Length: 111
Image (tube, rainbow, N blue to C red; front, side, top):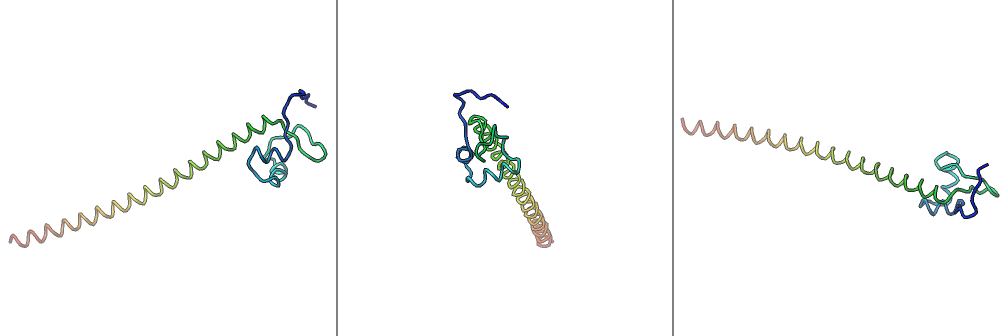
């Protein structure tokens, strides 16, 4: 068993929920799913973590969430650019057809 210094800040499930910004009910579910760091101990059916370890874990989760959102935004931007490129290509094609029609009319008028 790991020795814990007397001045080590500890966090139970309620504090974990607060640090992670999640509902208290999510803490036990995430713990069962293995999505939280392993607690130092379980005291009276309550998991106990080092406060700083939970803060570091929360920061990693926030960074990952930001990366995931950035990837989603990038995908949306790529999709929008693809749509815009297609629309521009279609517009250019129509303009080329209009120019060809005008040249044909111009040629007929000149004859």
